[in-house]
Length: 215
Image 1 (spheres, helix red, strand yellow):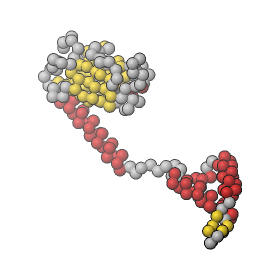
Image 2 (cartoon, rainbow, N blue to C red):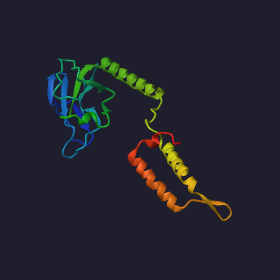
Image 3 (cartoon, helix red, strand yellow):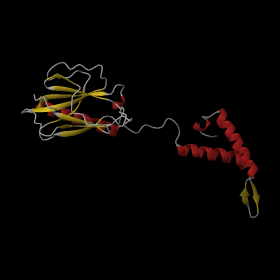
Image 4 (cartoon, rainbow, N blue to C red):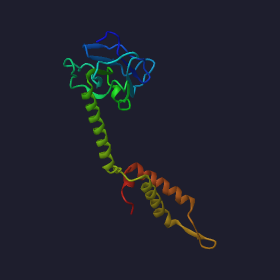
């Protein structure tokens, strides 16, 4: 395997990485990536991995890309293998020299100490099979989520709360209504002010009372 760098890693908003942090075997490379940098204090959510210009992998091989969220826990098990702490992300190789991975909207890369990206040169067919399994899992999860009904709110909706406030006001103010002119009903402003004071007091004493149907 050539000594020159083979892969480029570009975390969103961070500098390009070409030199691995360590190389456990001639076909495996580890890249320690900090979650934040001085120039980019926010955890990154996307990572691009690509073959550097002029790099060609051995025939019938591809680069499998893995991620580990605990930098102190990884320990690749030897040539062509990756420790259980690593999760498969995808691969690059002939015909697909680059790939962009979404790493959980920043949550994954906010881990203390950063993350470790493992790149393993493996059999191209085996890498393709892992990619296919990953795609099938993603499709299955999407279908399952589509079948699950939307979770109902634990409390009443805003519309229901508004209706209950109006009902509470109506019940209180209706006894103060009177008629003027040609039968037009009116409510004294003082009655509304009294209702508002009592309503505020009730909210303070029992904040959940609107969650129950009004009498």
